[in-house]
Structures are given as structure tokens and as C-alpha cells.
Image 1: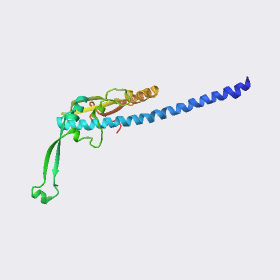
Image 2: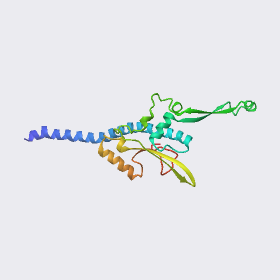
Image 3: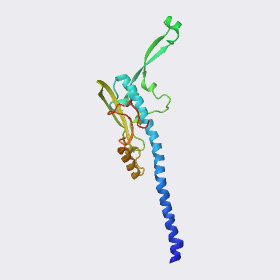
Image 4: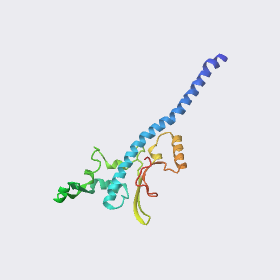
Length: 202
């Protein structure tokens, strides 16, 4: 019995404990690696939403109130582009009135994201890896220092973005964010605290 305990059971216990130790170390490492990959995809979406919102505001003087409005703006809207012919630094051209500006209206879809083949604005609606959860989009106009200021924000909560990953580590991450007074996820812009449309990852 003593030999069985010494040569079989004890080594099995040691191997089991070693496995549990390695697993406990590897879990957070793998979690953070997968989190970083998912965040990169989510940040691309939030940056694209910001680009479209800024273009929308330049046309309408306020931000799109919904994702439907934003997608429709990309598909059917127009942007005003000012093109300068000649240079104001060229005094001869200025004297001869050869320097001028042309105002053109161009379709948004022909102006934004031209370097992205296959760009589809409908992909901005859904949080990746979430199984279909929508990106949360808000807009508002608030008085700041006596001036009406249009604001927007787009939110991707970790509970959606990191769905299916280690539950306890996700709970810990959300708790840590809440304890620090930070949004538990990724966010661009803010309707509560104007931040020049910054992302909370920047």
C-alpha cells in the first residue's frame, strides 16, 4: 500500500496540481490575447462610425440619431467638397485670378472608405463575436458654455464583445472598469462629457 501511495498516487497528485497551476497561469494570458484581438476589430468599427458621424454632422449640423440614419447617409447621402484650383502662395496666379475654389457635391459612398474594398456599412450595426448584439449609438445636443453642442457616442460593451470567453475573468474585468469609473467596454465620443469624439482606447 505504501509503494502504491509513493509511486502511483503521489505522482498523480503532483501532476494534477502542476496542470492546475499551469492552467491558472495560462487562462488570463489567453483571455488577454483573445480580448486584444476582439478589441482591434471593435475599434475599427467604432472609428468608422466616428468618420461617418463627423461627415454626417458636416452636412446636417447634428449627428445621426440612429444606425439606420447613418447607414442611409453612407448609401444615399452627399458631401460637399471644396476643391482649390491653383495656390494662394502663387502671387502671379492670384493677380491673374487663376486661383479659385470649386464646390462639388459627391456621393458619400464615393468619398469615404474608398481604400477599403468591400466596405459594407451594415457591418457597423453589429458587435463582432456577440452573436448579433447591436452597437449602441446615441446622439444629443447639449448646452455647453451657453452654446448648443451636438454630441454622439457609440458603445460596445465587453459583455457582448467578449461573449463566450472565461466568465469569471470577464466579471473581474467589468468590476475593475466600474471601480475605476471607466466604461466597461469600448466607447467613442460621449453624450455626457464632451471629449472631441475621442475613443476610450486612445
